[in-house]
Picture: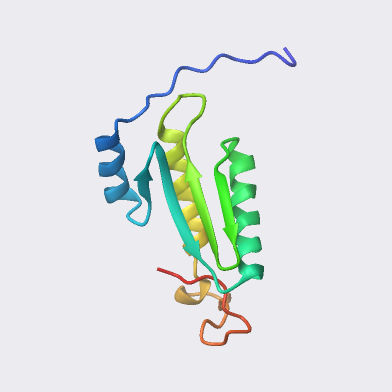
Length: 130
């Protein structure tokens, strides 16, 4: 039936100690702060910041789970929480992992024809990888 919303089961939310343990094990560059999981990505300038923000926005819209993004000239801060579940849920961890995978991908570090941006030339440097 078109337009009918299928009820979803309530998602489990995690206690602060559980969130911290999962972040340490799965997403070590992320942190827990005041009910949010957070990560700041350093960039080489506004062009890189806006491209990374667009990539994160694409992932979030596709996943239908939307982080807050805080942009500055040389960084993108991502904060996540599940407003529907009223806490940190698996949706947050899953989207954070996908953002991390995309943001940290470096084709020049893999076999294949994609060489990646030259990080030693400031004209082409993109992200400041971990």
